[in-house]
Length: 207
Image (cartoon, rainbow, N blue to C red; front, side, top):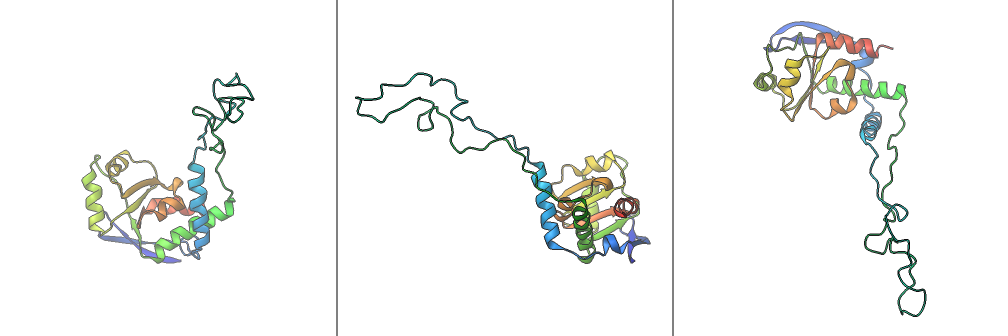
């Protein structure tokens, strides 16, 4: 098992923790990372976009003019696509955008993302992460102290003070250990996780 240092919020070394190689030292598989991101983003799409076909547009019950003798092309309804106010031909329809990815692949992708952060020296383990009151400057100071541009902060459980302190920062995401996912890990340059969150995440992925 790999051993990493544990720091306080003041960037002082306070101990160390062993990381499970099956989770934090797995082989990084780019194709699984790509598939997991596509899987997540596809599931976020509502798929409710739609247009009105000629059958959905009001009106057009009467033939606009007689079939012959006008010198114009024959027309059966003013709700046809070529008419102003008519239906749309090849517009989008409501559908499910989700793509398939089985549980074993999703777990392997998550382990790959975590292992990538370890391999890139972009993982910081804190003994604890908490604030007395919500204040954005506290998160900014934390990132500057550890020389980070953007980061994903992982907590073992919800903490209003930390979550509210970071929500105004576009380069910071706060998430609980139960919701750690590939997309959020990869979209931030660094992964900051508490020691309790490491244990919770290891327990979640141990199977």
